[in-house]
Image (cartoon, rainbow, N blue to C red; front, top):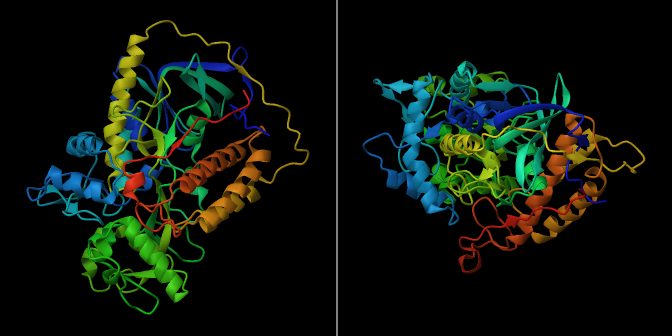
Amino acid sequence: MTPNRYLVGFDARQTFHRFTDVLVVGAGIAGLRAALAVPADLGVLVVTKDRVTESNSSYAQGGLAGVRSPEDTYENHVEDTLIAGDGLCDRAIVEMVVREAPAEIDQLVRWGTKFDEENGELALTREGGHSHRRIVHALGDSTGFEVMRAMIATARAAPNLTLWDDTFTVDLLTHGGGCVGAVVWHPQFGKLTVWAKQVVLAAGGCGMVYRETTNPPVATGDGMAAAHRAGAELRDMEFMQFHPTVLYVAGSARSLITEAVRGEGAYLRDVHGERFMPGEDPRAELAPRDVVARAIFRTMERTQHPNVYLDLSHLDPDMVRHRFPGIAKACRSFGLDITTDRIPVRPGAHYMVGGVTVDAEGRTTLPGLWAAGEVSSSGLHGANRLASNSLIEGLVYGAKCGRGAGEAARRDRGTQSAPPVRFDVPPDDGGNGLDVADLTNALRALMVRKMGIVRDRGRLLEAKKEVAFWCRYALAREFPSKAGWELQNLLTVARLMIDAALARDESRGTHFRSDFPARDDARWSGQHVASSPPTLTT
């Protein structure tokens, strides 16, 4: 069966309508920054599928990278980013984001963000892959929470902004060759068509496609999948970044243990108590995330132990408790004292480096659609994101998208009306009902086994076959609720990721092929794997 263009049927002549100048899908750091950058005389509607406080941005621990000390330079930050990106970064984009990052951090301060300070200046820490201390942070290890608190308060006070919680963006509306809004599910109105002069997609990542992930449950790739169905280009979907250190305790949520723990001097040890990173890389625990994650994977295989351990016992306990209160609290609930006990950790899916292709201003390949943050692929991260570069990308590109979408919407001052768009989902001939939870769990487990940190052609082909089978009977149905739509989006994203991983027959950044273990610059230098628009039932 062929997948449908839209996940649900609708008739624009009969559904409820909402009109706005700019529609922003997603209320994380990129989405709210975009909304706040739209000129105040234009109306902005921000929709988010959960509470406005529930996003990957809110859970960010480490901080935001920006050159702020006299010992550091823009050139240093650029070079660190290029090294981490493993030959796939766009230097012009890197230089632009790095140079605009400090001003965006200052804007957050003006909006009321209370970053940690030392001697009256913003406190700076260092993380893996950074040559200097340049990471600003808040509440010790709860930076995202504090940044989003200030941004949400600012957005709620803006008279031209409307925020809708608990509103699921089912699909992007297209008409006349461009994006004209979205089909959403609203808790009060049900199925609703939102018509917008311009749309900014800031719907976040897709970590929930894996069983082990640092992402909250909302990160199901909805924006990427919707953009794909709408005809926008996606690229670099093989590059899922696995965070090296995720708390691994039976019964616990897979909590992130921030990069800054190693930045402050923590060691990684195997089950026998031996440090293993100095033998893996001259940067030891401060190597980039892809290097550390693979080293942990090899150590777990060598020792036949399900995790490794973070050791902070040699550090000043008062500093540790002050710097990492959130991690200390999470570990304490499992009887662990982070100043004396070793913390069990293992890698988990953390950040999708690829996504919807955007240019330097945030435009996608689909007219009327802009994208910012984790949902997008800007060229900043290359094949592997440098720690704490994600929030600054969200800020810089969010601001560009908001300004660009606002200018475009202002040029289109004509009276809005709903085009006669209609879509009928073909009848479901599957017969029996589908156990959505069971299939979702099966997909997430398969992605860990066959599309994880280390890949090879045989396992990727097995994954491709199995996911294609699931897609055949799951993507042609119309589901009545969020769980079914999320499953369809996860399947769509998984298929794109597997296809891209099969195509890139080399190892680079977060993508490691054991059957092609070397980086192949002769064939792959600067080359992206683009995901073409699908063939759909329309």
